[in-house]
Length: 97
Image (tube, rainbow, N blue to C red; front, side, top):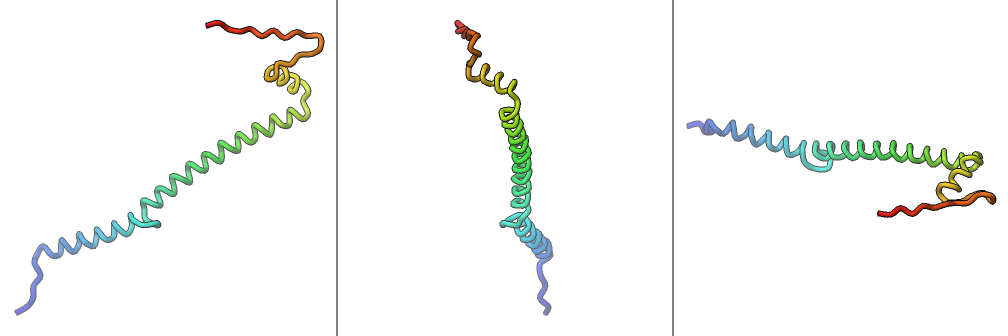
């Protein structure tokens, strides 16, 4: 008498093997989910780097103008600090609501 496995055993064995493969690929620190998550984080960080580089370049431009451009310095003093020349008067209008 030979030992014979049930007919449905092959399907269950194949399903178990597939389940183990999927669990190994999807789970853990080097699985597909972690890989996708790291890829998304990398994209966000690259975008942030670009944004910060643009901001740094803008600040560098302002610094350069403040160091060398007297017209710009005067404009900043007038607009941001409310300053005026000796022969000028500054009027501030208070809005009503």
